[in-house]
Image (cartoon, rainbow, N blue to C red; front, side, top):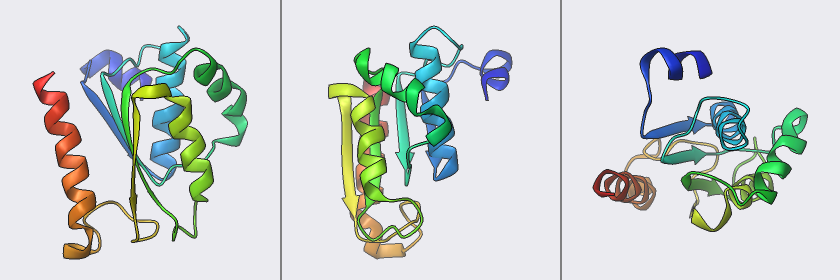
Length: 133
């Protein structure tokens, strides 16, 4: 991810689901702490959990005040990644993080069709705000 960022980026927003959301959180934390090149303006992380091998890095990121403006899509019905871990990841991003709760489980917004319309609207609204800033 970091190599692609350097070769093809930079990009405004990084998006990740499940393990991809954990990876995105790690590379954003590394960038914010001066350990890597990834420094997006925003992030959309869906179904993230605490990346245990990088918990110390994420704690340092949290202590630093976080980084990119972020939207975290989480579900209390997620049976793959515990939602409390996703909440902790959101807290690492500081006061600019937002959480959108949905009832669809471990999915990306839209996987459940019309029942995900609020989650789709939350992601679209976030991206539109990022575009205007």
